[in-house]
Every structure is written in C-alpha cells, then in structure tokens.
Length: 89
Length: 89
Image (cartoon, rainbow over all chains, first blue to last red; front, side, top):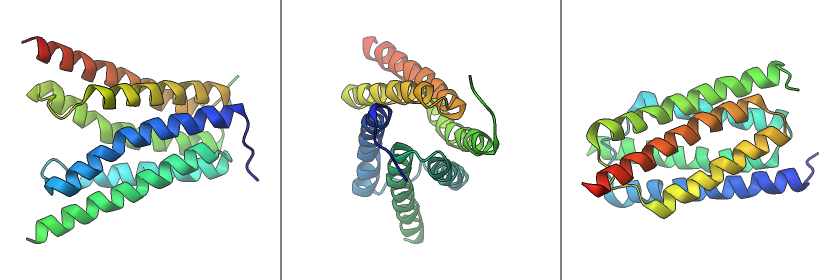
C-alpha cells in the first residue's frame, strides 16, 4: 500500500524536524501546567485540521503525513487533557 | 501541473484549520514582543522541517502542502525577526 522512495525519505525527515520542534512545547506545558495561553476554540480547530491532514495522508498514501499528524494528534489530546485537568482545580 | 480533486479539497481545509490555529500565536508574539519561550535551535529545526515539507509538497504535487508550509515559513521568518529585534534592545 505504501512505498518508501526518496520523496518519502524527504517527507520523513521533514516530519521528524517539525514534530521534534513541537514536542518541547507539549513537555513544557506538562511541566509548568500553564495552559492559560491555550484557548479551546483554537485547540479544537487545530484538532479538526490535524484530523483532516491524517485523512489526507491516507488518501494520498503518504506515510510521512500519516506519521507526523498521528504524533501531533496525540500531543493535542495531551494538551486538552492538561487543560481540562488544570481547569478543574 | 496541479490538480484540485476531492482529496486536495480535504487537504486545503486541513491547511486552513492548522494555519488558522497557528497564526494567533504569531500575532500574540508580535503584540507582546515576548520571544523568551522561543529557542533558536528549536526555531531553526522548525524552519528546516517546514522547508523540507515545502520540497515534499512540490515533489508530491500537493498544492495543500505547498500552501500550508508557505504560510508557516513566512510566520517563522516573522518570529525569527521578532527574536533578533527583541534581542538587540
């Protein structure tokens, strides 16, 4: 179903760079519990966007897009979890 | 060169959502001039990642990936500009 050629290798390196740049933000939020800057409509829009990128990745048979957005969607779930948990306190 | 089918329409909606979710962050940084949370290695990695996504978009002939990452790379240039300008003060 999926083929790894030189284009996918470029995509995988791209996915690694952008995901690696995003993860420290998630880690920082986890450490500081500071979710004041996260607005729920913004997070929701990001979630819909990333879910659509995932769908796009499957339709385009692009393993790079699928991997990058799978990791991002897990990160968004974590951010939403932090936000709800912090809000209840 | 590029064709707009239902897959590209899904990609374009995805690009709109994720870009729209990202832009308030750039605007906030522009307003507050608070770039303390931006580390240069992180921004550099993001820049390389987005540049590779752009290359990937051209190789995959994906107008969605090209548009999304063009806007993101302009945002990164703005963030780097804020960082350098703020640093000099």
